Image 1 (cartoon, rainbow, N blue to C red):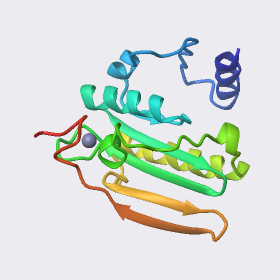
Image 2: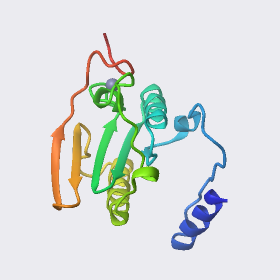
Image 3: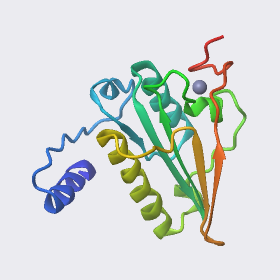
Image 4: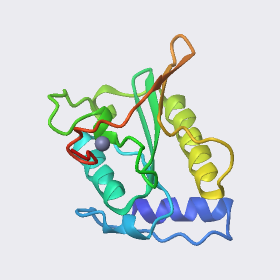
Length: 165
Ligand SMILES: [Zn+2]
């Protein structure tokens, strides 16, 4: 199974790490409750929003990465902080978005490595409280031009998930 293969590969690199592989479709994301940090590496909006809701509910920092074709995004939502934006502040759940998945559109292979490594870096920084996280900033990478852009992201008081109004 995929999760067992992933566990074996990771333990080959670092045998001291205990990996709990969960081989089932996560419906309610209660697993988030016991996490220190959550990494979203999924490829569809329904799952991304479900993970975001769980992170808002349990106030867990969320490191979100996405890559499609030659474009990628990296975000941190430090939901331990009441003033931090959540994923839905940026991409509202009721927005009419065209689902574009890398499984159908393809992704420039090294790009997933770039974004994955940066997600790991932000996750480790959050867990170890090192430096300044990417909370409140969206990093956008254009692989074709090799250019990074950073956009500030603010909490939406009218957000349907984390909003206070
Ligand atoms: Zn929100």
